[in-house]
Amino acid sequence: MGTAQNRVSLYYFTLFMLPGVLTAYGAIWFSNLGFSEAQISILNSVPIFIVLILNLLIGRLADRANDWRTTIIIGSLFAAISLTGILYSQDYWVILVCLTISNVAMGTTVPVVDAAAVRLADRMNYGFGVQRAWGTIGYLILLMVTGEIIARYGDASYIWLLLLAAFLRMQAAFFLPKFRAPKLEVAPIQGLVALASVMRPWFILPLLGYGIINGSHMILNAFHSLILARQGYEPLTISLIISLGAVAETIMFVLFSKISSRMSSRGFLAIAGVATVVRWVAFGFEPTLFWLIPLQLMHAITFALGFVAIVRFISRHVIEENAAEAQGLMAMIQQIMTIVAMLGFGFFVAQMGIQAFWVAAGYAALGTVCVFVSLILRGSSTDGPIKR
Image (cartoon, rainbow, N blue to C red; front, side, top):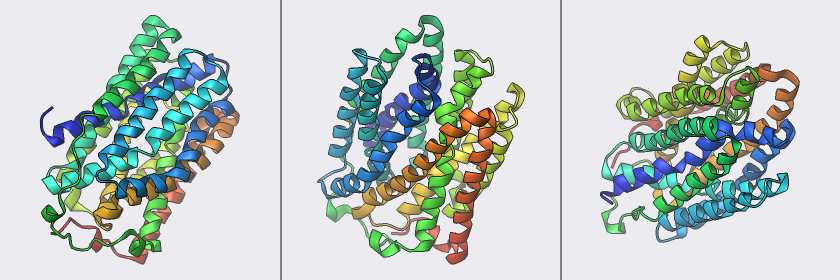
């Protein structure tokens, strides 16, 4: 299967295929099955609530295992097998249980994947962003494929797309390399300490800020396709509109290694926060297709830049022995903020329609303030490149 880098890239290629299928048509499919906006919000928020309870535990167990690979394989396996239940029933409670098990399995695994991949990239001296870009490429392909297949074959084909994405990811997990180097091969890294030693406001606030900024994107993931459908767009057009954001995201992941030295991690995160506020305010004015294009391209800044910034921030301050737990802490905070967003957005979308994006803008502004306060508490000089 080639080098360790290629095998991790293959897994990332499959990692977000299932979210791509869900983003492209999930809300519309749920609506066609007769589910209300409140029920759709519950479908999205219940798995996140369970994941936030388990994230630190799974991260700690993964750190104690001989290698992170085992945790990733188990999570991918459970995520695929649990989805087979929707073949037999599309009752609301069946879908809720199946999607919850699947999303919990992967929701607790993704932080481990990111922690393992970024440490491997640092050790082998290649860009994590380039590798992470393969995840967006896989997501983008399934976005476009979903729109085309639904347009041709209708809702009956949607279940098979969900299962295809989940089982491709499961298969790719078995090809992953071992992530940890033998102890004798690991050179000490200056400035890294145990997770408990950095649990201070200057460290926690960026995690909280990122969680809020990222959580504000949940209105886009959960309801954007439904909002666009109500505006009269066809499924294929909706997939193409959403895919613009994925294209922009991929470009940012590829280019980040070239610009990463120009600013601190928290500086990049602050830029992502400000851009997110601007983006959601503009979305609330029900933009035409002409304006939707640049707004979708802003996903490169609002999502991708924020993600690589927070991952780099954590990797620059926490030792490898706590890597998955630290990433799990970030994911736990993110999921708490996402639950708050999802439960609120379901109500606001029902009451306000597309103007609910203005609520998301206010939410993102709160996260951006957290990042700026962290920079005031402690300067950005410690967020620089790794030194061995």
